[in-house]
Figure 1: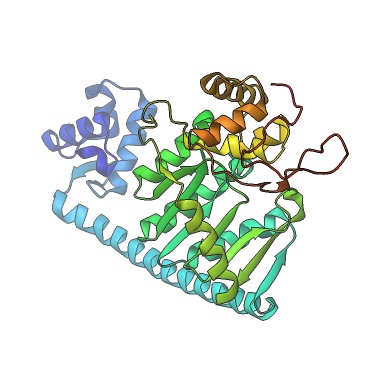
Figure 2 (figure 1 turned 135 degrees about the vertical axis):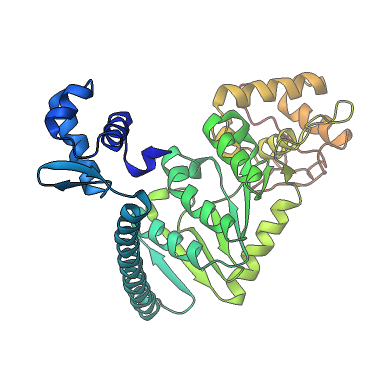
Length: 360
């Protein structure tokens, strides 16, 4: 309890010694207190500073603690008032600088959109928008947006928004379960009151603040190309529609992933769809955010479950089982109709061909 006054055991012992022997001298203390002389002198100086002792004609006299401590408390109260006033002035200065910054940003922003060239500029803009968010912040965060550096930069912004009651809603690719740091961050968001889900794939990173302003990449395939900030009902309505469409296939984080019977998981269905587009294994694993060996293991497992000897056969059997919807196109790339012996094209079948000549 006495430590809050800065009194250690030696200082307390000296004070008790002087109480029993008022008018004693420093020489008496050195004889009566078992401690080095330098330590005794320091403790006496501290007791004098606290006004618990006073010097009278070279002797030490104890003072009444309430009177002595009242003087000390008055000094501390005066210091607290001074620092409180200083805090008020600093806060006013910060508020003024913030207003000037916002005014300058508003003057330099073209209506509707603004290109952000560097990562530092993007981060500064995210800080600004996160600080102004009042209702929600929804994000699509593919694998390349979940580096340790990116998560370290986002954490204080996400924490600040959630502390203010802003809903933070993040959607990650299902490959986040293979990323220990990314999964820990996603679980932290969920445990802190945010909303978190996973989808088989995400087309690009996207952050929308209060459904009024959004950030998205200039080129999803080139992170160094920068980002663009967009606003306006036309832009935002389309981006929110994209977000909500992806949320239809979203699975809550850590939800039970077992499927009934031998049905494929959402990730496996997405794998089949990407294979049907004629993508190579390398392109498939990049879109899914998994390693090449993992993607090939998944492909081999699906073909074994389907009892297929080729990817084309796997596509046909997937359609038969209802795992895929029959379609005459492969999504991003149309499926070419096979040619007959005379060189003319025959009508395409309803099955999705997956045999694109890429080894498993």
